[in-house]
Image: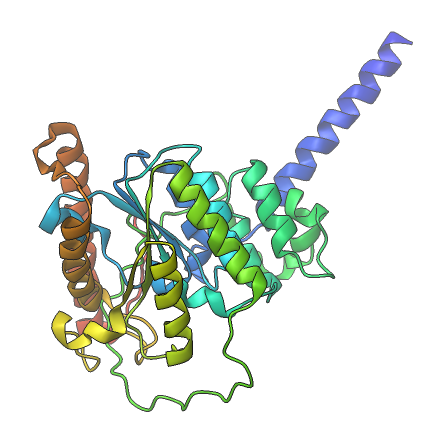
Length: 353
């Protein structure tokens, strides 16, 4: 009887081990395609000592340069951005951040206010799969799931990616134990240039009013910041498309005034920042490239110092040593990308290894 139970137990253990090995093999590594899927997880390997934390969609991770904030002002920051990050996902990422640190300032990019309900399962994955398990992740999944999404597939990704066998490649084995790093403090460096040309006309809308769900989570974000003595800043990144309608901007101005918040629509300061959409964007005005992101960071850094008592941490030896290393890597990557563009006309390899 004893040996029988030993065999049963051993079989269960073997099955569980094989299951998780197969699951790990099938889960995307975001190493050569859809690199943005690796952004959210990278926060957990940081030192959790940031004066400023950004949350929001692609207008966060593509447009703000944390290294420039450090080099110019001694501000430490991290971008917790991901593609089409919905406002409830940003709220729960804010909650998740507070498990590890309490920044002086949290910056939320308001473009996500246009969405009042879950949108698209693949984008959900790019945000939620990278979160560590916690109450915040459970809540984010519950708020984000579409009606046909399985809750179990978030807990056991095998059930989402079980049909990915045909896509298995060498990178799945290479990065089996550790996924590659694709950003520096959440910022995806792009130094290529695709000038802004034709910008589609704004799509007609019957109603410009932001939805109740969007406002509900924005209110909760305000309350969470106040409860933790954090300065919440609302921003609209200076990108030409998707369109930011005047009616949307009016609502954010009104909300900020009613809640005594700083709101900055950077579209109004394109000339003041010196942005040139012939040279400062890598995809025709949808996002800034690194040169545009540096201009935005210099401009925003001055505003942060004007409104908040942020220390210049370049005099802290340990902090300076770590961030100067990040800065050196950052500039090496830009030089490498520029060399690749000069040679091949495009960026061949973005991984930060």
